[in-house]
Length: 205
DNA sequence: CATACATGCGGGTAGATG
DNA sequence: CATCTACCCGCATGTATG
Image 1 (cartoon, rainbow, N blue to C red):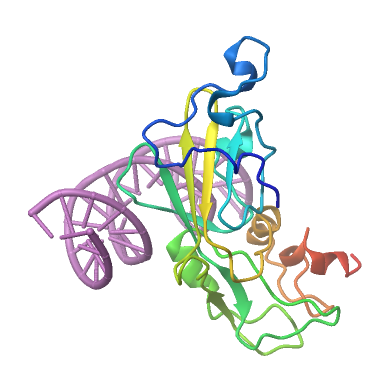
Image 2 (tube, rainbow, N blue to C red):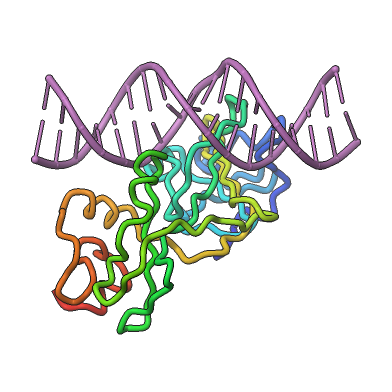
């Protein structure tokens, strides 16, 4: 994953980070303040120690969203929003699907909802395992963290750590699962559970 | 309207570090 | 003691859904 603004001097914790970006200057000329020359396209799966600068009108950036299951964490700093990774829901038997894929569901952000997810039967019909959370330990043994900071002309993002677990299913399918109570499927896997997933792509609906 | 959940806020605690 | 990080918890709001 490229980090177009990774050569900048700014850090999310700096007292002064670049405030003027791109056309926000109103000059029409490339902005060179602190080396920031472009806005990045939203990175759904940002990983590693990366930094991005998003457009303030980016819906994804405004929602501080991520493909990873990130939960808000209190850093007692009203200027910087911090989130930490919840890891991924996996089968405690680490079963392998016919197509060679594994179970890697999206943990609920809500603590209560996440507790309910655990110990549920593995959605793989051919498996008798249970779901469990594989915690993220990608940042010195602790969960990977994301930091978000808004300025008048940009949304600054910074990540710390490398995820040491599979990507959870994307939000869209996680939401689809909540709705449909169609769990176990004939193929041995939940249909709505795996929509938009690589597993789903190997199954025929 | 009730329920479930995503998301943000912030009080408070605990351990590590300087 | 100050600071930082991780984390627990409740509260509030917004959205989707039955």
